[in-house]
Length: 252
Image (cartoon, rainbow, N blue to C red):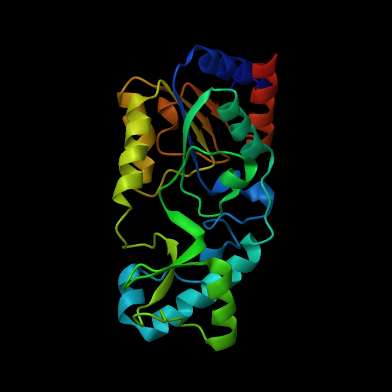
């Protein structure tokens, strides 16, 4: 692999020649903010099993188990702050370089950093939704109810099940957000992927779709992905180091 500086130089040239840039982020961009990668050793999925959407609907025990997991995750997320990589992407947007930002993350840190063109394809953990009537609440309100009333909150209006406004396994992906993400992928001429294992479909297909449409790919991920061979530049360094270095060189 070429040196870090050589790869930074190639990536900067790609960014400089691009007219439309799409960024795509996964859990790895938020680890420097203190949020554990779900798939890593000690991550939330190592401590709790995955409760599918179908189980959540069908089983009281599954709903209680799910809310215990979400209550622990909320404690981890509520004090998290954006890191250098989040701020660098927000700055690229302000500079007119970044057309859109697609994220698998539910933590809201991109918006906290100042990004406005964010497409959350896996939803957000900052709201809760009634699966019956669609009523919405700030997640803090429901987490307080969970703590005080028990781990199966119900909607006051229709008695429907309340769930964080995130996409669970087995739950349909949000059609509007996925359509926008696909459009960003196929219309860009540079696709920058940061911190995703590219193992969860359909999100994992977005870099391939961008590549098929003629876009160059820049990957910044600690571990290998199934499509590393498609990327023009691959970084294994931390997202903060990569994005901060890219931003400094672009400013120059």
